[in-house]
Image (tube, rainbow, N blue to C red):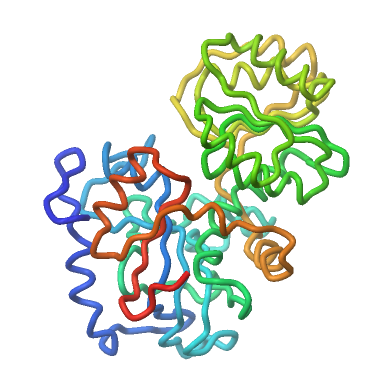
Length: 357
């Protein structure tokens, strides 16, 4: 998507041409329940970098040039005839997953599992890292005046933490183990504490990221070096004074999944948040005989209103997560920064007239 940068032989340059096309925004047709947005802030996700570098994630393969970006916010500039809840000038956060039809999953409120879902920057669907972007109005949420564009963009990763903590059943007094202190691990810490977790312990390889975990609410941290999964589990138990009832595994690494199983209290719940290899070896008998429930999550659903309420009430603070900002013209530099693992969240600013948070 950045000039001659390639991805598995595919030149990702399409967003450059999109930028040129949509500058004539008055010619962009907006029909029915659609809105046209002037994009403001777009965060870079690990999946964006993975598509850029490898051209695929699992069964999702980049076959044609594709626009990246799905953690986003912007301003409404045109609305379709059927849109009544938004108007030009409204600042909105964008939920990137939109079901194409109402199926059994939509009817039961689990629309994220719909096989028909459109999702920004997941092949073959383009993302929203561009100047202007058209989206379903039903999946654009008005931001209160005291919630910034960057906070609006961070609702996407924040939603993963909300969905994961709900799936884990985190509640008042829970002892929680979060494996990994990347952006998703950090938002999981924030939400676990918000939902009443009494103590949260976080593990990671990086000392600097563990320091950030402490800053956003972690009670204990463990810098993992050469320990076995069983040794990591023992350290978690030692710090908490007991085995945690809830474990959020946010790395997808085989050894971390193993540590998560060993660490979780009998009768507890392990949620697989991070995605790694398709096949992993895990101590499944250990989990089975101790009745450790292993659950997966796929993105999120019904989380934007909750996240906006938390941000507007100042019950949570996600602003420290944004450590780097780049104008859209320096997108390649921004992606290189993310690839190197610098900071926490890299944010691209798409509106040349407004580079504020």
